[in-house]
Image (cartoon, rainbow, N blue to C red; front, side):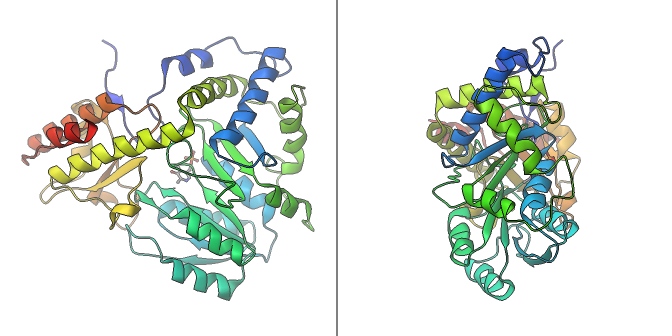
Length: 384
Ligand code: PMP
């Protein structure tokens, strides 16, 4: 019997059949005209999904989201540059680590688990550190906290800093307006809200970010991460010409082309609204089930995943029980609370059927753990 369990972790996610079918098509030469066309089209659509400026430069390279983080930092940071990290969880700390590895002098602005630092605290840190770069994790997947990118980016820009947004758990699902919000480097991985298998790092650099890259005094110490190596590749393919630096992941790029076409057909605004609606239905269900979220205020709760505390008397074995009931969900990740919560991804093609199936699986798993709660009718009501 086919595996009918839903993959509801915060990436990789359930994929659309035509994306998978495209992935399984014959592997083409990276110089094949049909591949050149697909790559060129995909790059243009990446700019649209990120709501980036026309003069912004997309990069799509083989690697995961972490590679995109590394690439963003490697190209604009030189040893001794100051950086401020808006720290909303484990992935923000990964960004701090990456910055430190590239020689940055890092200031983290922290908050308790489930919260985000205040705008005032971030501004005070920026005034003190005078950073070249401010980094924001749009949705920290370890806590389900969504940071207020727009005002944070505005503050960073007012103080002359470049803004890097880790949108790995947001782009394609959460509202992010790279150009309008003044984000210089926005990045994600293919396996999340873009709806493609893992394996592509996707990054868009604003014109300002490219200027900062060009103004470097030293060259980027990693060849693979160097914008200078990839820029001619991306420019050539977008102009429907081939160019070789390192072999592109041709099947994944083709699958990305299919997924981005679907996103374009849905429309990014409609996609944001659908994610918000599905997340709202999940939140209604968690509330009805008296399950608390990690984010301490409603406006901090992401639309791409729910991070939910286990109720009294329930432990991490709930994750396996939910899986046995048909929904593969994830355990906790934040080192301070790892064993105390679980996470449900709700991004990509997420639809009412998925919400109802997952809430039902959580209900039954809780019942098996001796806790009788019901969230299905609240979810249904929210979906009406
Ligand atoms: N940042 C965030 C916010 C993430 O959710 C993840 C993946 N969970 C990453 C970075 C790292 O991405 P990857 O696992 O694709 O390297």
